Image (tube, rainbow, N blue to C red; front, side):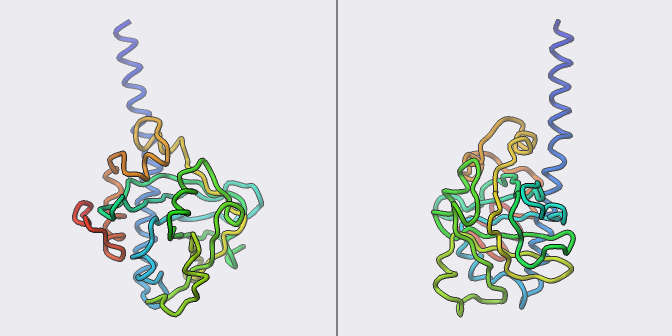
Length: 230
């Protein structure tokens, strides 16, 4: 009996370790995407917007087949600023389904970045799922060093979205897309069932794989406790 219990525990531990590999890889890829996009300077996400962003999401390698309505076409991560701006939360893994990504349809693999700008947008992230356009307002984000010249309407959007395909980076439409937490991947990543709200509120320790992501975020959107993630 003891042998069986021990074997069961060992099997679960091994399964969890291997199960975490895929979401950890996605976190590292998200850091690379953000680094490459911000390195383009004149064609990057405006740094003044990133500094104001409450949450940042990255979905590497959306697939062309995903643009069929209802098909699952992307997995990524999202992090939010902790209360008081003292640091970034652990990453929550997400799925994006349906809708479209602006003018990048048919371009093959596409990287998606979105930034949540206010409390209303954060509230939507805490739910099981939300649909862009129906539950939350989103606009194609401006590109360049600064967004100071942009309209008030854009600055009041709950989410600003961007996509990159074949080296072209631009604002993107997410109209009709549904975002939801990937509960299975979060369970594999953290070793137990955990809600997206618990993760984004800073109630769990970030995995080691998130360190490169924090380095990039703190480079362009520093928090009051940036040194915590360096």
